[in-house]
Image (cartoon, rainbow, N blue to C red):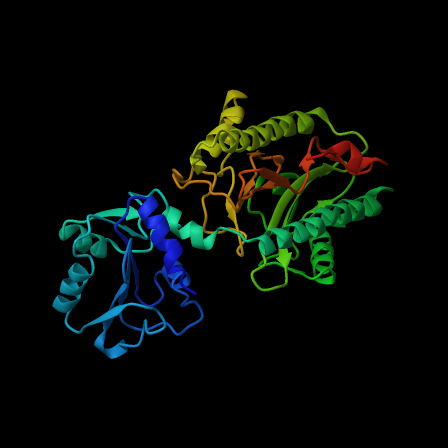
Length: 404
């Protein structure tokens, strides 16, 4: 349901005259969700919905599909000819100087860029500055309520337990020199999720040795790796409660099949953990000071640690992503590598922090989730792995983890 009052309040706070929402054949899913049209039939003609900072919204729809926006409040105008469409857009925006659209400058943010260049040209052509709706979108796409925060914590308890299951299974099968395949571990995790009422859009990553050096590795039948004594293993898993509006927990841990972890793995992990903790501290300090924080700053904090260690070339992805009802949500990402993320890190949003170092022989990633509550308190969920998990040690978990 459209929250017109909240949108208009945020438009005024941002110094925007309005928000022009547009869609053509489902090309702008962000607009459709904000307008409460997700799940409704996608029309074949363009529509426009303008929410001014104050006053009544205005609609522009095609004569063949005049009812396209009837579920929404506001005055309706109808176009047929292309010239009427251009005139109609100009009329919608009359009196405005600065308007938000699903647009990002250059190639800065593909998650927000949903409006075609021709429409941007049309709007600019009538003398209006186009601003990105990125922060507006995440207010209605990425902000959690109390129920979602509770569902995240419930999912986190099970995803955390899944590591005990996975590393325990590996220990059981390898303790006397035996082996286990990546897919066996993956299937055990999926069965565990199903038993506990969790769902996920895709199975977890279980990567041994060189496979752990591929950030998006996927085990495949007949080509999955064999885990045995002396193996380095990465497990990356994500899941949410199988309930409406549930949100994800997304975590990564690494282990070594042995009682003592070789120095090459521990020293690499120590750099990754320091980068992870620097990103968390960046968030905590900003919110404690009441300072606006943008996603790229969090990435800079983590990446700076790794670059100062002389291993920047091995950190080949962003520091983190927004987490929501999709594991990669539509809020601010922690990124100054793949994009220059200028969206604000907002209260009541959640994101991953997951720096990594990837080489030909093995890769290390440490991933936790960070949630900023309505009061600006920063919560870390998933537990902080302090060193590589010695899978065959009697007190393996105690050696690897420390309190949040």
